[in-house]
Image (tube, rainbow, N blue to C red):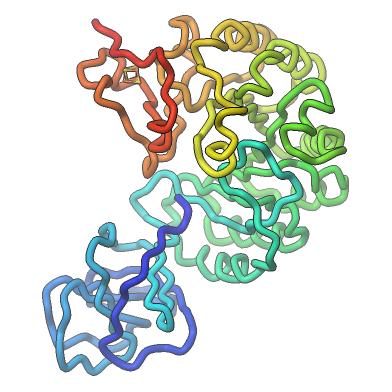
Amino acid sequence: MPSLSMPGLRALSASSARPFIGRIREHPAPAACGGAPEILLVRPPTQSLPPGFRAYLLAEPSTGVSVPDAYVLPPGLQPLAEGDVVRVEPSTGRLSVLYRRASLSNSLLVTERCDNYCLMCSQPPRKQDDSWLLDELMELIPLISPDTRELGITGGEPGLLGVRLLQLVEQLKMHLPGTAIHMLSNGRSFSEEDFARRLARIRHPDLMVGIPLYSDLPEEHDHVVQARGAYDETVRGILNLKRSGVRVELRVVIHAFTHERLPELARFIARNLLFVDHVALMGLELMGFAKTNLPRLWVDPLDYQEPLREAVRVMNRAGLSTSLYNHPLCVLPADLHAFARKSISDWKNVYFPECEGCSLREACGGFFASSALKRSRGIAPVLP
Ligand code: SF4
């Protein structure tokens, strides 16, 4: 999940001048934390806070607190737990949750800058210098539990960070060698062969780069990403990464500009990019520009069942590992159910009232919370 942030922290004692991050501890006994900054979470009201923690977050107000950096939590904050990592901004009273230990969908936002400007971008790019994000992530990574199964790297476009992206991947390899990393990138930076090679040379044990490709026609891809020449760079990036030994997933978001040529794109991939490791055909998330451009982009999944079926058939027959993301089962033909995955991050995954009593509820990935904006006419419980 991206960082969740809310104001309302109230200082009870002298507070730090600058923002800081720390890992939540629920127990006051000193832990073998190797000097890592730890923040004690205090639930029952108390005045006797043990010294030695970077800060203290109190669920209830207390008086007579003598340790520095003690704060009362704002009401309504989602529960924090042992091992979560937060940022405290004393000057604004803002608390941000950067990592939740219990979540399966943690991701690291590395920049909001991007060299594409996709019509359906869920996180519209910004231009300002946000290099502090990476400084903070370098501090965050050693605080993340080594038991974390997977972490995402998202943007913006991570490739724009250049050498600093490579340093981030090295940091992940050093501190979290058992954690799979899935990086979302438009692939354009990897059109420089040396950059792709240097990423490969890190030899991260479990790294995959997810790269969007929207058409077999360069001009159509460039229109979707609103950047002339992007298609050539993206395809070269995919080739360079695979040539260097980095695993690549192709991602195709399906909407009004992409659904008709899905079979042609599938044939292009099967002929020219057969060596990619996975292809994900994805339903639209109605966030950011996708929301703004909804009238231009929306197509009911019921109305692209045939090109979707043909695309899956072509790629499956070619031996490509193929998945359907973000598609509830009731809008897919039954023969595509085996390709559908529960792909929506836990913190934004919902089901509608129709799903009560549906025989496919357990197997179905449901909806984005934002899907209430525009719903397929095919949503209906499947009866046993
Ligand atoms: S009714 Fe709900 S649970 Fe059933 S297939 Fe449709 S979206 Fe999935």
